[in-house]
Length: 164
Length: 289
Ligand code: FES
Ligand code: FES
Image (tube, rainbow over all chains, first blue to last red; front, side, top):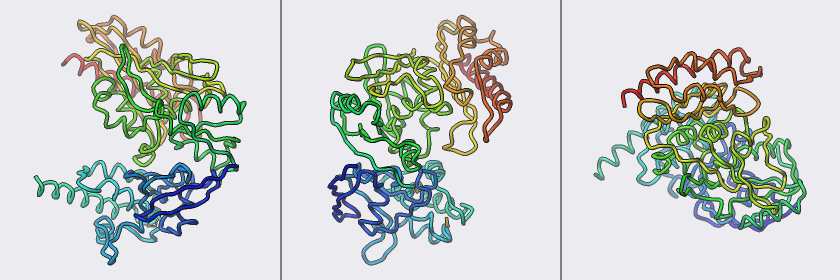
């Protein structure tokens, strides 16, 4: 059983650790980093609750080893809001559209939507709704999450229109 | 739900990876995207002594056009296939198939080679490689060999790959620029493995079919080449083809099974219908073109 010295940038801050090779990125973030916004549900790639952004892409942190993330740039739900507490547009939209109840699935959903709407990306409504198929929510019945996704697609389109 | 302990190594060349696999004598498992392997590790259904991570080997990445074929590096991410302009033009059905592999989040890490090397019988990419006539390049310290995709699969998750071997490329042969493609799957939810699926390509010359490559997924212990249907299609003019008759021939090559998702009878019934309707639809398109 090998152990590895790794360094990951999490929400702009360095996180160093000595990890056993079998430790998932999700466990490393939660246990070594204290980023408990990473929710581990099924731990085998089905539920999507553990989704984080690694080097710009939404991935399941239960399906990646911590050692594989060495040198990567990771964003978790804790890294989205402004330091003064202003919510990220995805968080704000989900809040307004009642897209959460218990909140267990929420960090994963938020990270997927945040990855797809980052920067000047112009995701279609279809792309956002399609990506939601990678998340299971036991509470909301999905309608609020879908409304939020639709609004985010429309907002991204409008932003692009302003620039053009 | 945590993996059993293992050693982890991340070689940076094919030679180094092959040497590790050779020394491990069957105790090593290769990890590419890990989107199927990590669940198996977490559930302790797979317990290797050494995990060999091939993500740091540059030779295994990327998509290159060579004479007669397109070489896809096994560690090419599925998400990168979706945005590759050359593949969209040259091998559109591969792109179409990848859209159905897992979810956005798993395609961001999952690889083409991982899916092809694993050999899940209901997965899209093994069947696509069989349909298109791909050659799978396999290397070990003993040398390199090319295996035709339709010979590669032996059973569910069983392939010709020896424990010391690594898939080092997938070669998709060229198809003529005007070839037409077929793809259809029935699954319970987006991202699930298919209950039944069919994928293929047809090349047309002078109004008749000059080349056909068609395979089923979810219709037996491996992806299944629809040999009889392919043979029957060759040389036929588009307006003389009876899709239902070809579907019946295609079905004759399958060996579907009962599981808790669907019965063999369901798979046969639905398989025949989607085959006939998909073939009928593309033939109409082919005539119009
Ligand atoms: S905990 Fe990772 S997908 Fe469920
Ligand atoms: S809000 Fe409870 S699982 Fe989605």
